[in-house]
Image (cartoon, rainbow, N blue to C red):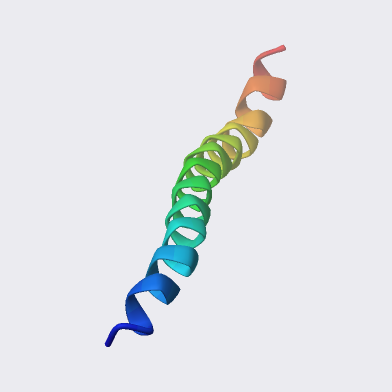
Length: 46
């Protein structure tokens, strides 16, 4: 158990940061997908 705690401390933080960044990227990708879906409609109106 004593060896496990430093391992979690060293590995846990990078994993947490990676998950946070993936979440932020996912929201931006969702926005881009929505914009691409609306693109044909916007082109028709012009």
